[in-house]
Image (cartoon, rainbow over all chains, first blue to last red; front, side, top):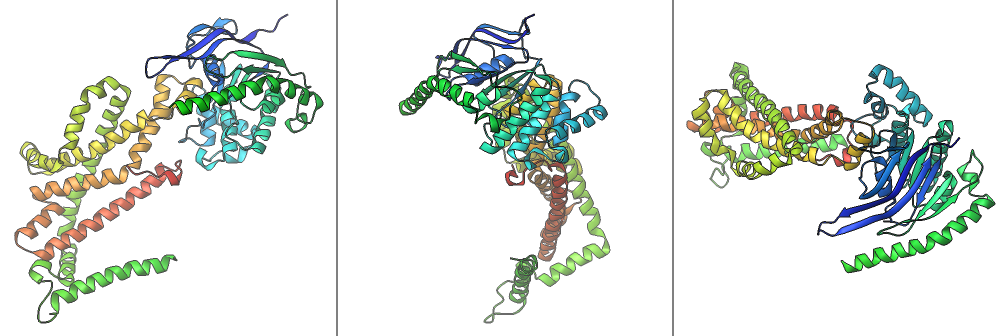
Length: 272
Length: 262
């Protein structure tokens, strides 16, 4: 029996029309499949279009060519099976933490009286049980991410799309959040597509690490399986010998792209 | 600086000003009174005028009228501003078509509309309400328009990814965002509602604080003019305090640092 494919990007190309009429190709022919229950991390240099690819999987962006399949169905419009965790703050600032989490259920028509206790449970499981009445601006960056995580997970999406969700956090908080994510994911093993620029984070979290080349017209240039045993502890796994070997191997490929991406971004700045 | 010291200094400023005013308008300096009572009156007369108004109770009627006009102007102007602001922000074509006219009407000093409103609506409260509405409307309109258009892209995408329909986006994203912009301009719009009412009264009416000031001016009763001004200031400060209380309740979710006033 084969596991069904949760997300299938087939020869996906993403292009934007620039202000001056030229067409900018962000991603050229990306081919990527995420199986059900699989945790895939996409790593690439800044500006390589990894977030763009994620937005295509979410249905927020339409690909210029190629197709997107969600559980073997072609994706039309927004991806209703997916929960999306944004890099920037995406909580509703005028709702309390509790209401921010409950809204995920209320949208589906769950009565408020039923949604609130479940939201409270979710807040507790992300460690914020005592912060239900706080507004987002009264929470720290890490706490806001926890609320955002609860907001997405309460809807029980089959697929989790994450766009550098822990990017704005400090190093320690990132690790704590990584562990929390793994713990929650371990409970029901959703398909995860996790975008990051941090290779260590990618290896520590994922089953597979996918590397993208520097943009524009970036492609997927590598795909590594991470066979570190689960459940993992992010603090511990970084000390593992296999972790180091894999890191060295992937970094040797990624390094060139990072340098290329860096050179391009500085050239672009000089040209302006 | 501690609160009591600050308060003491604030009171000191008032005391010095009033004493100077009283002295300069009653005691000759080098044989000359610097503030002729005919033009400047004196604090004592002004104060006794205020006391007379309140003890006889005449003032309440005028305050009541001005307050009613201000409230009506604020409510109608805000409602109109919210509706049109929303409509324009969601329909860019409509906004583009009306843009030059909106700019034109907004550029017009609203005082010149007072005579027209007086002709159309008579000397009763509605001509003053209309003047206030034209002032309040544009403040609220521009804020709501901005608020709806500048909803954070991420928050909007988040709403969509959480499965919100257009109607739910309206209810949970656009509407709260627009309202928060409206509330952040609450002080300005309430202030303008009062300005509209008083200016309207001043230019032609039979009651209200503006009428009181205009009447006093007509008979060269400078004490009356000053008394009217003081009552008006106190009135506006009280209203503003009320607005602050309302605002604190409605905008609890806002970080205080970005407390913008449009």
